[in-house]
Image (cartoon, rainbow, N blue to C red):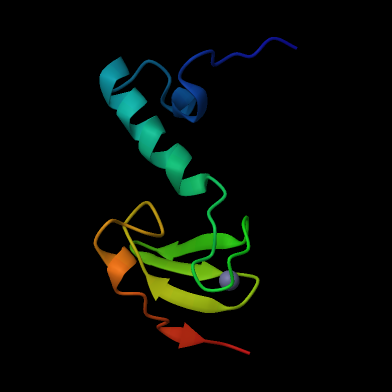
Length: 88
Ligand SMILES: [Zn+2]
């Protein structure tokens, strides 16, 4: 089956709207958001999910930490690792 959205990827949901440059920039951000991230606390890949803007959790070890809006670690908070909540 041929792919309907060739280069725009997940930004294909917008159809022709908003302009190609904006769609590609949105796609680059969102692909990093949904990519498999390594948990900074247990080091396991693929369990990191975003709870809300800037709030990330690991479904493996239950850590919740403040990260970037669209990526779990930013250049800044790399130096200040803090677990906000640890659930058993
Ligand atoms: Zn973890």
